[in-house]
Length: 164
Image (cartoon, rainbow, N blue to C red; front, top):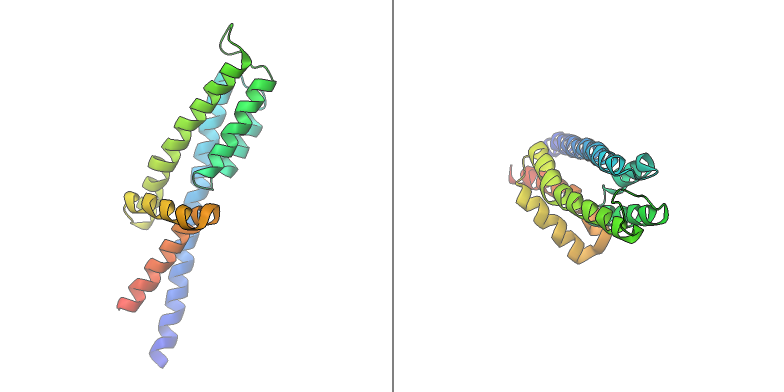
């Protein structure tokens, strides 16, 4: 009985540490995405690049769906603000170019950068993280995508304690 009381605070503390590390990594990823989007949109001369970059950074927390929504918004802004970074091209082409840039950035962040950073921080294989997010999305939609990795981290800590 006394042994269980000692183990429980350790378990809770480990879960807190893992979740705090997860949130810190997500914040770093948000900053990286914000900087990449701001740089790309600024080079293209898109109006409101800073606002779009911060919005994209915030939405990038939601795997797969966040940057998709942000890319649609940025593409529409480019179309309706009539940004001219491709001379003599219609504005819808420029909107499509921005959608393409966001698509590439989205895949880079979701399939390479996020798994590498989260995998390194939490000592989990990046492929496992991608698989967990896919499964979470398949079974529980957006909520599953958002909560898949934190759930995996908590389950992993609990599993380690049960095996001891």
